[in-house]
Length: 164
Image (cartoon, rainbow, N blue to C red; front, side, top):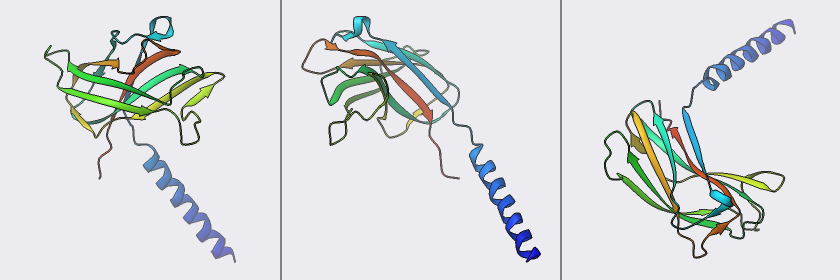
């Protein structure tokens, strides 16, 4: 009986060590949001954020939005341009995004606090970025102009995990 308890204790310690080792992987995430003036996103207003990337790697991009519960649409259509600010070149990536903000039942999918909702939605296959500062330019393409009840929009950049 004593030997069985010792084996269980040993196995428990091994499991905890494995969890600690695999749980300590650092994921670099850079996230910025642009404020939307008067909480009304005009079609001609470019929401621009700049993010510094530290290393050459594949990166996942995420669309970020904060809005109130009064926002009247179940999705948002935007464009995203990515530009390397060091080279001051034309955008090297351009994406048209149709981001769902609700589930099939019509409930907001984002995290909420009171009447504010925050969504973080993955928007692409990994994009290769080199070290440097990148400019992310967001424009909305909805039929209604301006879009009311939007507080912030932005981008998160996360180093993509590669298989070992």
